[in-house]
Length: 198
Image 1 (tube, rainbow, N blue to C red):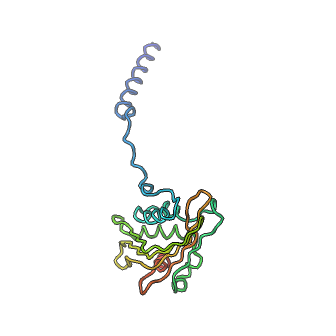
Image 2 (tube, rainbow, N blue to C red):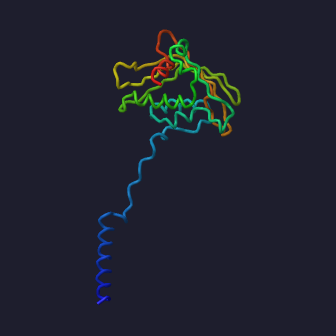
């Protein structure tokens, strides 16, 4: 009697196991997932040009990790990050006076909230001027930042002059240690964007 019951139970278990395996496709391979798009246009910044290429691409990719990788990391370089706001912006927005890397990260995340998710944030860096030594450089650009804001009351375009102090860290990667924003003509500067929405 017990022997017959064991055989029936085993058969029921075996049939149930086969049905489960077939119905759940446990034995089939799945399609590979697409790679993380935030890394698609990032390369190791072994020269200043690659650093600023990564910086620009972090906006079009909307990738905060790639943006933050452009800045100094104290684990690899004994230097602090400094942001110098454009004239008048620090007075209007006191938070700019204590701007740090955490502020940069918050700013970038806020840009993503402000911008239309279906359109890129576009940063153009033009008219490069560079003074470089073996392990540091000062690089200056005219910039235009187009955020394609979701709210029509928010200005879409910010422009001015950005001067970056960059250094080579212990990984032989170029990173930004100082960013000075300079107001140009009557344009709304990046500092005003940072101050207004942080």
